[in-house]
Amino acid sequence: MITREQQKAAQKQAADMIREAGITMTDEEADSIEVADFGLSNLEKEGIQALALVQTDRISVKVLAMLPNQTVPEHWHPPVDDDPGKEETIRVLSGTVYFYVAGEETFKEGFIVEGKDDSYTMRKEIVMKPGDQLTLAPGEKHWFQTREGGAVMYSFSTIARDALDQFADPDIVRITKVVDA
Amino acid sequence: MITREQQKAAQKQAADMIREAGITMTDEEADSIEVADFGLSNLEKEGIQALALVQTDRISVKVLAMLPNQTVPEHWHPPVDDDPGKEETIRVLSGTVYFYVAGEETFKEGFIVEGKDDSYTMRKEIVMKPGDQLTLAPGEKHWFQTREGGAVMYSFSTIARDALDQFADPDIVRITKVVDA
Image (cartoon, rainbow over all chains, first blue to last red; front, side, top):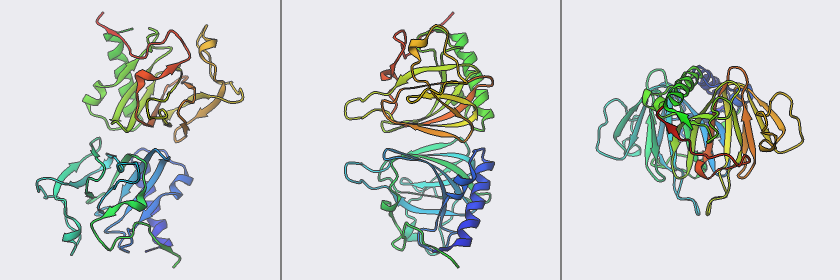
């Protein structure tokens, strides 16, 4: 869980980063930024801030803002009914993103969140700079991370059903609980 | 048809506009910008420049750059096999876009390409500035235009099958012929 205060602070930080990355955004959009802690109550280490630009029953476009040294836990997008699962393209707008997928271990620049080796199993590293992009097939396991300065990126995808995403870490609850302190 | 020289000049102009709008793009991407005259051989008046960022069999993301006073002819995205047709969200990045869809006539700021009243039948006007967006359902007729300064916008959509788009103007051929002068 996060407090309302934490939520507001992360929204503001994300909004500043998104605007600095060159995206024009209304104040209403800035207030709609999702702050997710994946139920781990450790937002600064494992979390994400996401602005949804398009959310239909066919496609989704989000701007993801990651704070410095923040990690998005390992997850994948499973099939749902007739849908083979979400297909997602990440394209970096600002900062550097360390991306981890299946394949030969090339782990070098990133770090594993303390004590969580079993929850971060993909160790093929792809270092992404502004203008770089990659496409994840449905079901493809992935996690990603920033270092100093954080990063802003687009997520272009088929329909997003975030609540149905699957995670390597059994402690994760995808929907974040926000409490008034 | 357009000449190779026209194509290169429009690509360069579009690339400059896209970069000025804040998008990081490789030179290879800049060279891949599609310049389309819709077979009308009148690119400056009726045409579009498009950079495809994502093209899979499920989604498409393009950056559209329109030169000053350029018009994209009235068209719609028909059903194809099991697909109900392309669903498309336009989001403006820079400049002003004059967008025309079905509905009560509010035509005011735009202009009809000379002698082509019958090819531009949608007259409900939506003036779009940076940060504004609209979503077109499959089959929804639309055309759009810029004035001084041109404009840059995103097109986020389900799979794009441009060659199957349908147009109000019977003279249109969607695939542009480029000739070496």
